[in-house]
Image 1 (cartoon, rainbow, N blue to C red):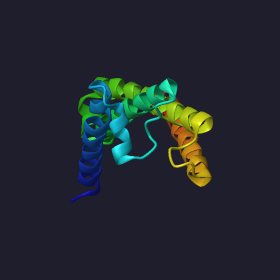
Image 2 (image 1 turned 90 degrees about the vertical axis):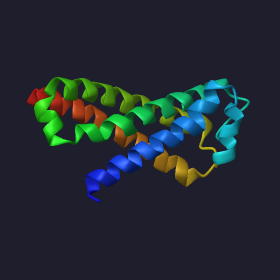
Image 3 (image 1 turned 120 degrees about the vertical axis):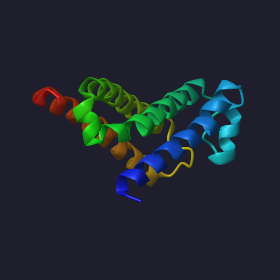
Length: 144
């Protein structure tokens, strides 16, 4: 396998897992089943935290499915308009995923209550948001 193939396969598999495990349970009213995979993820006392997590999941699925497409040079060359459109969706999803995750961590903490994990997640969220901003800036400057 090439690195690109590995990225595609792992991204698609994780998107399918997230969709079937978390989004499906959200849609059929079994949101408490989140805790079977990740204990403490579903918070029965907090409607807002659970909604933020759903938004985070949805944005993550978008990132995992359209992100690898952006890295294919021939796609960029042949379908520049689609590349731009997908790029805008990707940037918005990255911002939404990072903002939702950071709000969850700062307001509620992680489901495991580990301070180091909380700090790492916040740093990752800030970096993801910053990279999304830089991607937009770079695309605007180079008129991609």
